Image (cartoon, rainbow, N blue to C red; front, side):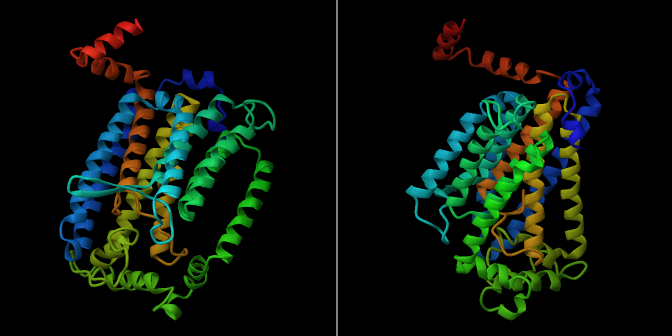
Length: 410
């Protein structure tokens, strides 16, 4: 795959796939996203109605609408324009992460959220979710513009500015005690750099440092150490550290092949913590069974294939790398969630994309989809977004301040 990303830029520009070839993966991506979102809303209703009524379902529906608007906005603006401001998005992400760290109290031992209130609704945002997109935009932009120099240790286009700016945001996520998202964002950054041609020797020192930090954090954090040591045999500590995983396994096991029936879960009745968020797929397995879980996994794989196809068919190196980075962020997150609920990985707060309850993750995931569709549209119709932007500008001409702004520009 690396050879595809290292193709000469002129050769990429000369690739002229027909519109249907370029847009078919985007159509599949949008279809699969819609199915996953609708399925997620349905299962959220089942998982939370008995304990919270329509509260979580209503909130999630609002976030789906906001996320859809965010995805449409990303599509209309276009990935090239958004990537050109990637350093700005990194700065905003860093500031928001610092606000969450120092200005808001910890929740469950982590400083991940910025909380505020809207009329009739308590809201919170998790800046680390949006930092994933900012890091993807920044690394893809930097590597595509400095392909011949980013492997050098010195110079403006070298590895140090790339690693330093990315590392600052990643360490800010870690400072908020969000280890899972730290690992995920690191995977996005490193995976994109490797796809762009990063020399493996540059990973030796960072990986050694990351391993030492990870060991120190786990060794000096009783909760995390308990998660690591208990997930192999949760039945031995099912009333303590293994409680959540053990109940998740009970939910999956009791579902059998076809499940015990929609809305019929027993484990969601306060037996399984976080049943509507990180462990909602355990409820899917209990109510709908192994066959439904297998179909869901196929849908996630189909989403990954469609996103990678969009990336590899792009006529720009930026589009290739950004599509690859966004695919890593969504697909690895889904894989981690599935591994956690099935006991293949230690328990960690990692939502299932498009399905788990959570506003920040839903909005960020739909924005990522908007960016992927933008890459496909730009491949089929280069500069497509200018037509949309010109249309919007023409509709704003009735505003006096907009007319004055346009005159000053001219």
